[in-house]
Length: 239
Image (cartoon, rainbow, N blue to C red; front, side, top):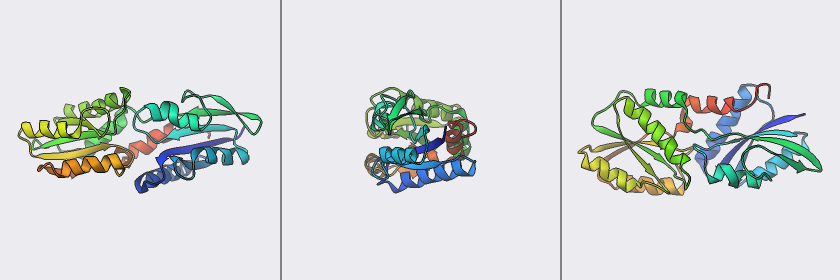
């Protein structure tokens, strides 16, 4: 058995995503992980090509690490399907006439260590500021549940928070109106994103920046050290 690790991001066209993916791969290698490769669902190197290349080099047991904040259609079905898998539950498939095993890791999800680091980063609490926890959004409820988890953890520290989604859910406009009606004129944006630089993110930024409120932006949660530690924890010991 020869094991390998695929760090699977979505868009190679995103400079931010590429930086995070390469940073994750470097972190894993520094922690002794072997045969670590970066791949993209959209763009190059594509996930299916990388998997084929790894298999030609002898890898027959894969762990696939999707760079995603919460589970959704992309991680449950779309990404696995491109790799010849029915879903993200882990499966065998044929490659070059032989069975290979896969472990498709879960998305970041609700993590207490990351929440604690986020709280520390945003401290101290400011009563003149609303923290806007913004996520991409999904037709499934996991994205909303994840956003609520981090929002609630920040509220427990005394922050006033709002939640918004770029797609499928409470809109940025609704969050802005809620903050404005409370009489608070400052919003600090907390992106539950791998990289807050895609089309949907840019549209949300445009809406925020034209709101007339004072807007500041925190870095995406992928910038937190806990994010890398969580990713590493999804790789089996000894790989």
